[in-house]
Length: 465
Image 1 (cartoon, one colour):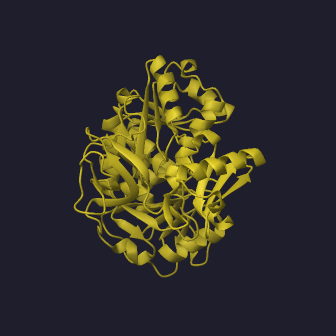
Image 2 (cartoon, rainbow, N blue to C red; image 1 turned 135 degrees about the horizontal axis):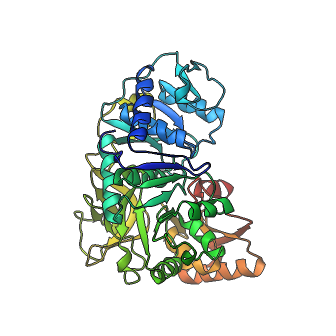
Image 3 (cartoon, rainbow, N blue to C red; image 1 turned 60 degrees about the vertical axis):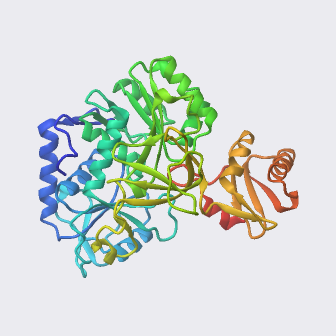
């Protein structure tokens, strides 16, 4: 893809230290793109493990102008078959057994892949470049349709907001089929930085050995990973080259934001809080590190080229300070729309750069955004509407906890809560909501179910209610 891969970018395989950059990297991508050009035309569906081979295949698809849908490498054969049936990709990259309507591909440069032999899907729209599953999807996920312009615009905007340059060295600390993890890759590729392709989890000794060995300068993580880092007593002073931490993927407890800001500031580093959605390619806002702790609780201001307004539900959209409503984002990184079938891949841009996020928030007098909840994260107790995100925030001192709507009550699910703790949570919630405790049920679980991106799996919890 013209403009995404900077001439100076390098990929480092953490497993063996092999480095690929400059002309050699561009030649490898171009060679794989030429191999893809010899395959039947149409969309590619690819499992996206954290390997150099998978990264090169992704870049080759973009270079060849072949839309690529990225999925979790742990996807089972049944789910893969269902996706292939719905979206009819011309090329399917996976180590799964060959599916009906496909045969094994002959070009080993592309790895394990299958070539479609059955009826091809409609020709995809010429602007379509990337397809990602919606965050936390279960059942039959929709795909987010992203254009080449959106991918490039977001990579450039993130690079500008974070000040990325050729001196940066970032590991793949998040899954690459996940929009935040993929945006770390694309923004660093665009900036001419080094990306260390690291398969090991952030909690492993091998990951931190790689941090030392590769002189990592920045690290991206989601809230549950920051919880783990605190438990591991993470000290940035042990990693002299590490100067930047970034966080997105859900709300991080303000106490942790302040703590990690303080830890990084003590060693001359930076801590960035960000907000994004797959539907906007990745990140929409960034809180400048130097505005902490003054703007604690905010997710910052729009990335370059983006704009935020609030729709209060009555009257026009506004940027008036203090007005709460649905967050509306505008920018070149907004998706073209969703896809549920192969026919949707041929559609053009449905949204015109305007995204209704489904999140509730407000702006302050400097244009900094504060997220207050979700439009659909609402329960009713005795006829009174309750914002479930507000409930979770008010009970954060009780540890990991999720609030969901049961058939006729509010259900609070807490990790490792004994009878006394459950009673305290119930009483405190009832008092805070001004309602009778009979409308609140508190359950205990050993561990909250999480989505692949580390967020509470509310759908799984609701199914248990």
